[in-house]
Image: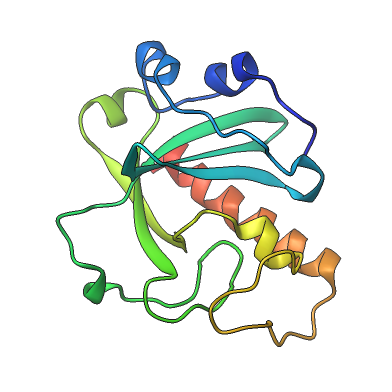
Length: 162
């Protein structure tokens, strides 16, 4: 992913107001060369997360929430639905995103299981290991990146279309 400045990041968000986007704590020291999309948790509000990716030719950012009222022991998956990295325990979390537009303003959301730290591209590239260690797949790096990008695209389609 090409480096993005603060203005590009803030203007990319599709499921929050401009005011909310202006208050997002943006990440620093981003390893752009290793990213197919940017994901981060807000250190000041750990129940919040953010994803910014190219989707259908446009830069798209989505706000995410980790429902803190649900204990992590109820996590139904230990595999990220985007990068398909296997984790144990608390390495995968259910995140929900308000839908874009009027449905989101009415409170409609979509959810998916993601790496709890939102660092999927780093796991896919082996730059970061899950708590289970190395992945054991026969797919090439290019195939894993393609799968991750396609899975993220499916989630983003749901944010836009339900």
